[in-house]
Length: 203
Ligand SMILES: [Fe+2]
Image 1 (cartoon, rainbow, N blue to C red):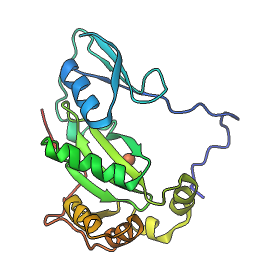
Image 2: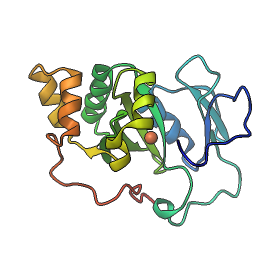
Image 3: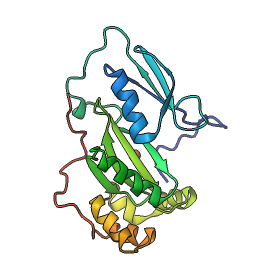
Image 4: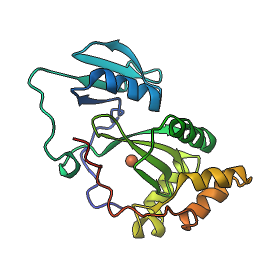
């Protein structure tokens, strides 16, 4: 049981709804979130935009107020590391990787966390965006696993992988379960293992 579990909390907690970023690259950001995550603007201007890719009125908002400055050392500053979007199936997730790769959009980090298989991109401002698929195909199962698995406690960051090797494995007929297990076992490691998970500096 995590030690900081709140005893005093809302009896019916609110749901996570959206994240808002400030930006000096409004049109570029709107286009990028459309390309990578299918977010479409429900309202767009140079000063503020609201985007969604589901039934919610927005999931990402972008604000560009006067006087906004670039970060000075974003990679090493506290704050949001990434937001995450989840595909329902392994095939949808891997096909999205291929679609983006073919357009020259490549991830900076690829990790199998056990609970999810995750590919991390950077938006034009350098914010992380994780595109994931549930490692168990079921939130209840992955929630149970993250809470109790010794394997996760010993290695919460996960195992790096090279997505091209996953594409090859799927082409060879391996199932999602087999590919996930082999990825966790380190069979699809990249040639170079990243030294850290800091966001690459883009400013
Ligand atoms: Fe994440």
